[in-house]
Image 1 (spheres, one colour):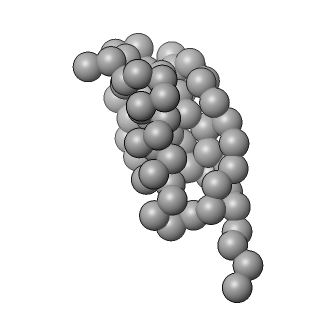
Image 2 (spheres, rainbow, N blue to C red; image 1 turned 135 degrees about the vertical axis):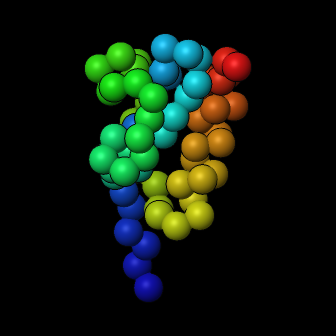
Length: 68
């Protein structure tokens, strides 16, 4: 079975949180507190779906030092 990779983009919100948009759906279904225009793009890449996106999101928080 071939794994399908999808794009992720990690952003820093004005309040210091690091959020990860999976396949362009975060602002459609995730209801972040800030509009995308107020967030700073940190990183973009591809990863396999499923539980891997949770791992990527946690790795981005650790890598970019999410601020409380």
